Structures are given as C-alpha cells and as structure tokens.
Image 1 (cartoon, rainbow, N blue to C red):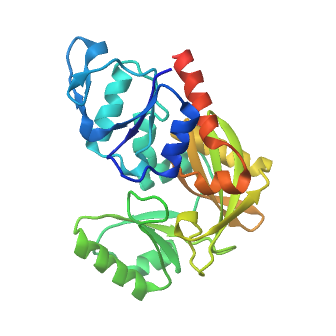
Image 2: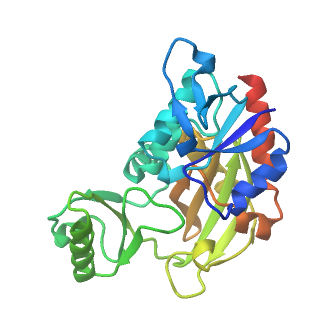
Length: 295
C-alpha cells in the first residue's frame, strides 16, 4: 500500500511520531513535504499532483501530520486529495474545525459535552466583564496552538489586562479565547488517544514545576491511567463530533468527573507509548489500511 505522511516542511530531525509511522508503515510509506508539491487543477483528475516537479501516482491513503499548524496551502492540498478520492486520516474539514479553538468549543457545547465556559474577546475588553462571566483565575488561549503553546493563566484582572495589551501589541487584530479555570487538580490532566472510533487507552500527565500545564513536551511526567467508561464516552463523543479519525483528547479533572480541555488532530504520542505501552503508530497504520480498502 502506498501511504503518504504529509508534513509542512522538512526537518533535519525527523520527530518521534513521524519516525514511528514510517517504521510501522514499512515499504510504500513516505514523507511528503508541502514545498515539494504542486497542485494542478484540470480534468485529468488522477494525474494532477506533482511532487518534486514530476507527475506521480496518487497514494492509497494520506496521513496529515500538520495539525493546528495547517495553513491555507495545507488545507488546499488536503481538499485536493479529497477531490481526487484519496482517503485522509483526518479529513480537511475536521482539521480546520479542531485547530479553531472557539469553533471546537461551539461544537462541544452543541453536543452537550462537559467543557469549561468559554468567551471570545478582542481589545479593548473590560476585565470586569471577564470577572463576571468567567471569573479569575482564567485561562487565555490564542486561536491555534498545540503542545501547551499559546495557553496562559491569568490570576486577576491586572494580569489579564497586561496579557491582552501584550498580545495585541504583537498582533493588533488577534482575538483571544478566555476559559473557566478548572481548579480541582491544577497541573494534571488525562490524554486519551482515539483511532478509528476506538479509545486506545489513557495517560495521566502531571506538571513537575508547578505549572497548570501538564504537557510531556513541557517537562511533565506521565503514567498509565485506567480507561474508565466515562473517559471513553467523552473521548469518543468528542472525536465523533469533530469528525476525526485520529485524535488526542485532553481531559481535566473536575471533582469526581472530567471536563473536556481540547482535541488535537495530529497528537503527539511519544509519552503515551512510553507510559502506556500501547503501539499508537501501529493502530494508525492499521486503520489507514482499513480506510483505504473501504474507500
């Protein structure tokens, strides 16, 4: 089977997830970088992709690994594959919704998923309005981000005002997501990996430096966590609501229950494989083969 793993740009250090997918995919699996691809729209649909200045046969399946960093060209390329009948893990629409944190929050609310109260603000914004609607401390997020980047905690109105001024000093038209801070167990969360509608397992992540963010890439530590029915229910319902084939679902502890933090369409799984012993890359490749045979 011919499988393309689509990336934005070449990195001299192939990251863990990409390397694992190459190993598990075996012969016929290759990396395709945006700068090497030309999109040609014509009537010869099956011959309208050029890679490194030559027309190539289309793959049986595409695995995008661009996630929240998917830009205009990336979405255009994925939509072009869809137009040509090539199955994707994940499709362009699901990636676009997931990278937009507000749109994703709207989907979560529509599906009655347990998610923190969310507000969209632009400068100028009155901190007293945030205090009334969300309360302090609050979590502020830029629109596109992953691995804990672009997420901050504001403990009071002064910190919030300072952050807004800083953010708009960098990009004046930037809208900001403000969310309720879930106080039950700050610095801890649960990452669930879902592939093909099945929750593979769960990992608890804990911050080591007192940060409210528990990402492994930011120095957090992980451990295997029991995949109970409630976690599985939220993770699968979230994945289905977004239309994702492959997802990383992050849950916050909320008393005896959980709140949905966010979803990722190209989740990192280095720590997940390490702490759970689950072969995520193999699950993704196996599902890619299934989807290619179905479509």
